[in-house]
Image (cartoon, rainbow, N blue to C red; front, side):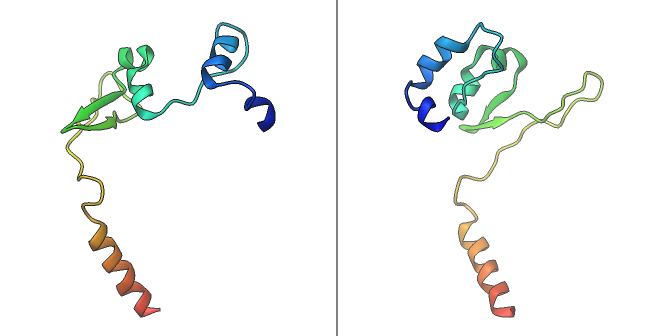
Length: 92
C-alpha cells in the first residue's frame, strides 16, 4: 500500500476520496487542523501566548472545563530534566 499511496500527493488523494463513502481523512499538521472549518466551529484549538493548544476533551454542557493556561516554551525545562535523568542514572 505504501507504494500505491506514494503515487499521488495528499491533495490528489483528498480530491479523489472526499465526498465518497470511503472512510478517509487526510492527516493534518496541527496548524492545518486548527484552520479546518470543522475544528474552528467546535472551538477545538486555542492559541495562548502564541502557543497553539487543543482544548480539553470531552467537553460537557453543564460542567465546564478549566480554561487553558500558558505553557512553558519548548526547551524551558530541558536542563532540569537532563540533570534529573543524570542523577537517577548514577543511582542505578
